[in-house]
Image (cartoon, rainbow over all chains, first blue to last red; front, side):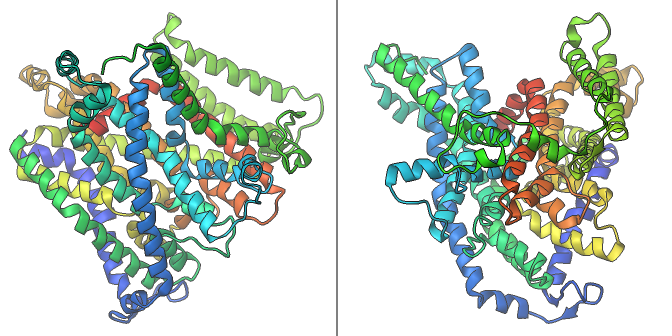
Length: 287
Length: 334
């Protein structure tokens, strides 16, 4: 394809991405240096770095950052491990049974995240099924407090994204080389040895792919935290994203919220740049 | 990997899978039960599993006031909806070109959605439902038509510009929505576009564009180059050969991408929450039921959630193959 034809075909998409992604990012940078609320939205006031200083002194921001880090540290390994194990089990059945299980397992990932969260939350209402079960097992009443809300957010996070890792690993297992397993069987390898020495190395590139995307996606988690922290508004279990949202829409400090968004963008880019560089080299080699 | 053959091993496999299925389904099961309960049953301390089901919650979510008793309009609408759905499900067994049946069916649905509020005084939820359909449909159409052109160009052009765009798109895909949405909110307030569907649709197209072009590109890469080259030798220009030769071949991939765009648009919460005040789509509308302190909302939230999930499950059942294919393609190719 010639250069002109390329730009003729790609220009609508390029224009949209430039106008609605590049420009907004620049605008966010501009706004992060302004004092802006809903009142002076047409005439923001330049305050230099004051928004950033305020954020770094803001205890609530650091608490939300800590919780986000905790969330990532627990949720991401759980996705990988549970997804891998369930995919191994799913690989043991075939035909219709496999199709039915796959559809069921995918449900939490397919439905609207907000609705999934609401459904999950219904289990933990005072009259909910798991509230009751919790009381039967532990003998104590289920109390809504900071710890329990945070636990629920993490458990929900694990529940609704695991299907994605299951499908990715499952698809990966379908391409495993059969000969290697035959050779291993002849040498008398046990099942665990085969998993340890053949399967895990074989899917390692998939694992890296999953790790990368899940770290970025769990950093951005918003919907479920937003709904679940409503269980009891007193114990705000904020992540960086929900705190940014609250700063913008409830406290109405749009400038400060934009500054937080910019800090987040910089944080993500630091993680992302090595990966982007790898992709860049791969793309260059492809040509 | 080779199969477990021992009997206890097989039993263990099925136990693990069944337990995981239960774990996946519990919230759906419980919410569906709650949605059919009366207020009193829903709030009993010990969960009630057997009860007299009621449509009350669904009726309250969808309908503001019932038409006069004996009105047959409601039944006619229900029967018409059922007939259209069956026709579309079994289109391949009917000796007419299925494309016509699908188009006719979609038009039929449109007429029904228009006709219902003429007969019955519907609740606000119906407006949100229509709004969601409008936003989703226009997002898919715009996003896929722009994305197809770009995805095809990116699959065929070898220059540096393509690499730069692909890498930039990947970076945008990783950034949080809020970084884009807050400036949109600012632009929206300055231009009075806040709370309009146009702003939501344009914003949705833009934030999903990186994902769309990557996925479409991977499907266009699979189409052999000889196809359009031979068409172009026959005198077709690039655009006509693209539309007449490449698009039909890549059609399954385009459907997969459209399906994911549908899910992304239908699911979007944050963007719609910030950019609208009354013109909500379903996720935002439903979250309003749970935010209120009033516990009476609990069963309504359940009914609203189930109502909003059913269309998605129908679509997924219809396109399941495309969904799994898309997930696997996105995963394997990164």
